[in-house]
Amino acid sequence: MERSEVQEVGSMKVGRARTGVRRLAVEFTGSPAEYWKIYMINLVLTVLTLGLYRPWAKVRQLKYLYNHLMIDGVPMDFTAKPVRLLIGQLLVLILFVVPMVYGQITLRFEVVMGVAALFMILFPVLLWLSYRFFFRYTVWSGVRMRFTASILEFYLHTLLRALLSLPVVTVPLALRKWFQFVGEHVHWGRKSFSVNPPLDKLYTGFGLYIAAMMSALILVVLLSVLLALFGILSQSFWSGIQWTVLVLMLAIYLVILLAVFVGYGFLRGFTVHAIYDGIRIGEATLRLTITPWKLSREYMKLYALTVLSLGLAYPYLFARLLATLVKDAYLELPEDRAFVTEADRDSDSGVSAIGVEALDDFGFDIDFDIGL
Image (cartoon, rainbow, N blue to C red; front, side, top):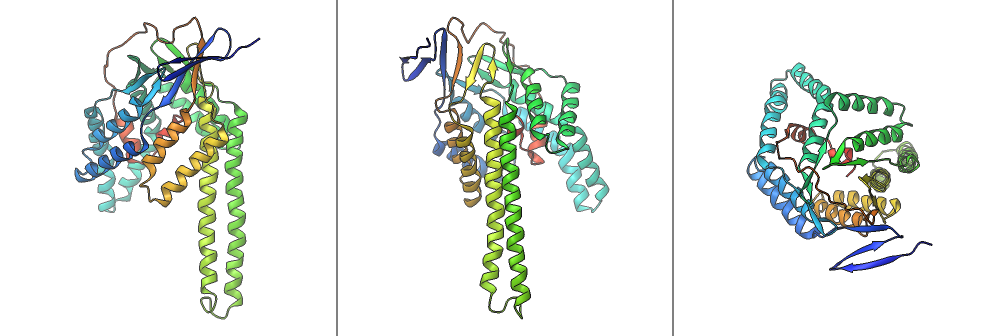
């Protein structure tokens, strides 16, 4: 017979779901308002310094989020030095940004196309460098993480993911194989990770995303037909019915926005839930108590309110979403095993940040690529 038992340790609860198993609480203690203030100050300083402050801004924001993400009452940490990001930023300027701007100013489109082609060829390499950077400087309880995939393995799996995604219907399968590959090559000290997202959950999120987009397309077509009819039936397109036409045009715009918010919310919510619920770290298993439906609604609110606030509410909403995601989450492991061991505490030998800076400059969202 299973028994439920909860012990109070300070302000944190450590529960035992059944005999021989204990739980380590996961929580986010940061303030959305405080993170918003840090984000906005960083944004102003970055603009005033023409981008030179961006490495310090990025590290400051990540350190705040990491330092307030607690596992068993111990905060995580992000130990990267801003100077590494600054060096990466300067290399990106020399290799990509300056040639691109030069080509645009001089109207030498062969230069622009050449830089774009070079970026696409190097994209897997840049993504691999970004993975190594973020994992290398993620630390908990004095033990840092590592990403051990070779550049060749990573390049081949990136191409495989792209090929598997071509039929569209196999996109969830491609995501599942990708995150399994990433999980196999992530380590925390001596402990290995294991990620095995349920395929049915990935397909549910993807299916709801497609359904939202198709529904929006049908509504847009119907509204467009009505708009055309008004134009045909009226002697002058703007005579007498201009407000009706404007309302229909506005309705088309709102339908498209609503479809994006709803569809991408489902896609992100179900995908993130599939990745993290059940992830294994050594003998410990991460459990999320939030449902994928609720998580999807939180992502929808994030996207909608970010657009309505012209982006100003984003940092506040992101911190609130993170707090909601880990609320009541926990790590479950055998009662007789210690989660923290004397794992190798290797030295900070340094990892290039050029991939992080290049993907940022070209507008790629690496957060989604690693499931955050």
